[in-house]
Amino acid sequence: MVRRSFTAVLEKNETFTAGFETEPYEAAWAGEARWFVKVQEMSAGTRMAAVAQVSPDGLTWCDHGTVGFVMTGVGLYSQGLREFGHWLRLRVEMVGEAPRVKVTIYLALKE
Image (cartoon, rainbow, N blue to C red):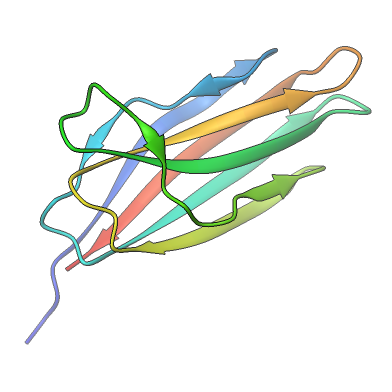
């Protein structure tokens, strides 16, 4: 049997200068999820920390409970999730004197 999978692009070549959250994505059918954050540009001294968030309705959010991941330069970063309920989004915090990043964020889902 072939497992059903889907990859959603939630942010594409977007530039951010402060913390943000991705658009929510309904993923109740999936048994596992994986975030991919492709950092294309990052200003010197910038650091980003990402935490997966979950929601029962896509309106009210809390952290998933897993440890987040830190991004300190250009590259591809990833984190997998299980037991996440219905809705997912990624909360990203940025620190630095003049933080600026350009990113593409994917959410890969698998049955």
